[in-house]
Length: 132
Image (cartoon, rainbow, N blue to C red; front, side):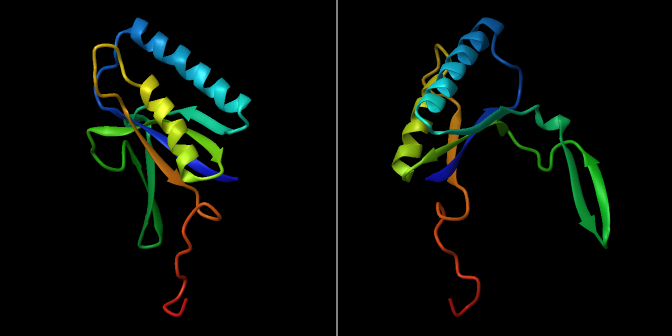
C-alpha cells in the first residue's frame, strides 16, 4: 500500500478555548483509533509552534544554526497523520474526515489538511536524467 502524509495547517495566533480544544482532541483520538482499526494508521504527531524550531543550514561549508521558524508565515504545520491507502482517493477520504474534525463550532471553514504521497511507489516517476 502507498503511504500519504496528511499535514494539518493551523493559523498562527492564540489557541481556541480549552473546552473547544478538548472536543477536537477527543474527536482526533477517535479518528486515530479508526485509522488503526482499519489498518491505515502508520504514524501521527503534533508539533510545537514554529518559534520552538531550530533551523540548520550550510553556508560556505559551515553549519549555521538559527532559532525560530525557517520562514514567516500566517499558517504552519501543527500536526500530521501518515496513512496507508491503496490509492489517492482513499487517502483523500481520510483527509475529509480529519478536516471535518478540525472545523471548530461556529466556523464554516476548518483547518486545511494537505495530502501528499511519499516518494516511491506512491509518487509519480520523475526522470533522473534528460534521457529518462
